Image 1: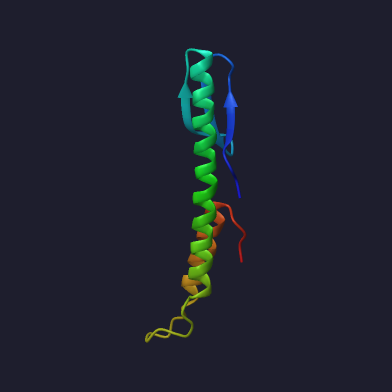
Image 2: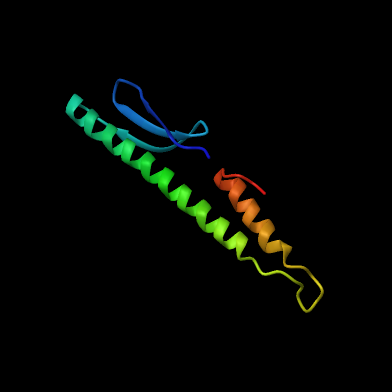
Length: 96
């Protein structure tokens, strides 16, 4: 599972990146403000991690509770599990 990385340019900006792309930024003018914004960045990353972890748990619950059998038209219900697997891979969790 990917987690955001915090980068401080040591001038006036802190960014949170995910897989090399900026997802959130903070600017600062003083050292006191820099420390405050760094705490905010760390809280943001912790929240991101917790939300991602919870989303993966929900997907796993849904995957395990997926109905089995066939529809009236003969199609299978494997699509539900395929959708759960795809969501897992998009979020960055284990697949399969």
